[in-house]
Length: 133
Image (cartoon, rainbow, N blue to C red; front, side, top):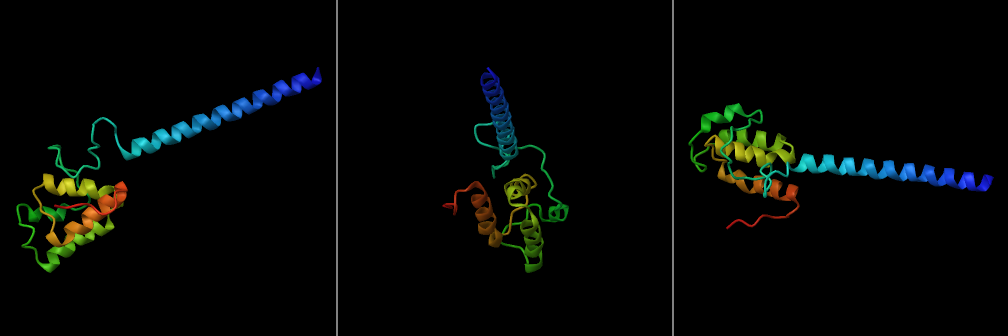
């Protein structure tokens, strides 16, 4: 009889441990999914490089507003370095949003930085080198 009670106790304890382990794993996965994408759209807008028409988000780069409507091949070396400073200090997951923000603000990324920015976005998405036609 004692053996039966001990067996039931052990099975119950293992069931609780398993239940909470699975529950914690699901919550961690849910948090990871929420960080990556809102899942409200067929294509995640958080990582999209296309302007959505929403209000632009600034990435501590308000000084770049002076380049509104300037062509991407008319930047000086000093002006390009302003863009480089922002690009290379951003976290990888923010680069797509920053590029979208520039587009919404009618600011063209200097042509010399375009490949580097697209490579960062592509690597973050796990696609490797992007195909640019």
